[in-house]
Image (cartoon, rainbow, N blue to C red):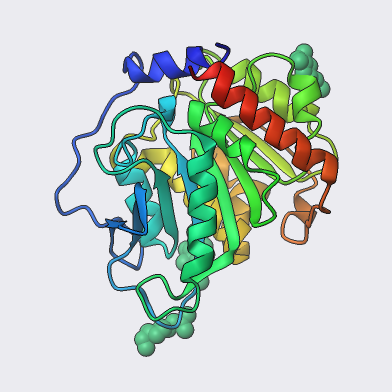
Length: 296
Ligand SMILES: *[C@@H]1O[C@H](CO)[C@@H](O)[C@H](O)[C@H]1NC(C)=O
Ligand SMILES: *[C@@H]1O[C@H](CO)[C@@H](O)[C@H](O)[C@H]1NC(C)=O
Ligand SMILES: *[C@@H]1O[C@H](CO)[C@@H](O)[C@H](O)[C@H]1NC(C)=O
């Protein structure tokens, strides 16, 4: 039952202000975006540029909602914003879906984009070799679960962190992890900070924003957290060194992030975690434990 704190807090909406979605919201990036559904991926919501540019390859974000809620529209404006910057964002859960997700749906997203690359459809220019896994709160724990998937490059943890035993669990995270936490009143703050501290030998970043649990993820375009996410993906998946400055050169602090700390960011782009059999086994076990024991 360890994840129930994140699950219940978000599902009850205790600290999450839902922005009214705009019917014509297409994001602020260069590629106006919307969400789509595909029969070949029925339990998901796919955000992408409405007219995918033929000459630009689109890296991927797989996303787990706060509360592990299965409504792929819960952080809709945030994901539209990301897609409008030239990404395909796949949320676990169909539009308006009910119930809970598990990290198995993230794995489905990752497998699915691999089948789309190079096809003549609207996802043909997906860059299925550039994948970020991230999520808010309970969804962040799902992102941890897929870190052992060889296709996943980077992990984003928003208002989340392991609940208990941080040292043992976080020390096994062997890919770059960026933490976007609320203030010290965020129920995940201490957990995320402890995970950050216990990660060894991989690039990592931590920042706190003075808002509560789940921050601005449901604000229009994801608010300040949407901006930070775009910078993170621009750098991590597209190698955009201007966006890197948000993390390496005070951009985040200027944007209102505090308690910022980082390590090994010089090797963020070149980092390639070796395939680690122990990590793969551990990830599978963690997934089993978190899904079967914690979310029931
Ligand atoms: C892609 O093509 C469009 C239209 O021809 C052009 O304006 C744009 O600069 C191109 N982008 C890149 C990254 O080549
Ligand atoms: C590692 O996690 C433990 C909690 O499990 C925490 O008390 C400790 O401060 C963390 N270590 C670092 C270096 O942050
Ligand atoms: C790189 O990131 C910066 C900062 O977000 C952005 O202004 C710029 O458009 C990006 N460059 C490209 C080629 O997308």
